[in-house]
Length: 207
Ligand SMILES: C[S@@+](CC[C@H](N)C(=O)[O-])C[C@H]1O[C@@H](n2cnc3c(N)ncnc32)[C@H](O)[C@@H]1O
Image 1 (tube, protein in one colour):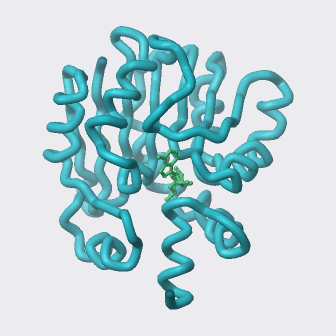
Image 2 (tube, rainbow, N blue to C red; image 1 turned 45 degrees about the vertical axis):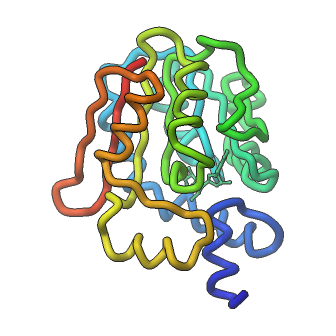
């Protein structure tokens, strides 16, 4: 495998030396898009948040700021991501406001109805089957709970199409494909937004 392919493949599950370098770029690389995505959460009331595929943990930190009364659980199936997210949010972890766990979104280790809000930034591209994983997110959300998906790709932009070819197992989805999978997984009130000038999208769904 070429070095470029090896490096970009670290976005799927950061591991080893290249994974550490990739994690070092993720927080700043996704910050603007994630902050835009979070503006769609205004008015959401939440006590328990789950941040799925948390990477290096910056978005969990932002959620802690935006929801000062809330507890944020951040999970990622990469050991390295979970370690980075825990380090990034160390003071909130020590204060009992944040928990960081290694875990897979396709089998979440939480009882039904545990969370008010679930978020997923730049991660669903790698999930093993959208409908199955979305059903798992629906299961752990409370009735009326909210799920926010935020992607840099609208499934049609050429940059993302290039990355799909480089990164094994990556799939970029259109808002329509995401909406359809959410509905099959049992979500109601599904609504997508497209950034006015970039291929960024959010999809908000209510359980
Ligand atoms: C491109 S990174 C995005 C990280 C972070 N959300 C951000 O916006 O910076 C994708 C992350 O999703 C995680 N991930 C991918 N599939 C996952 C799964 N099935 N369960 C949990 N985490 C997953 C990867 O390990 C990686 O840390």
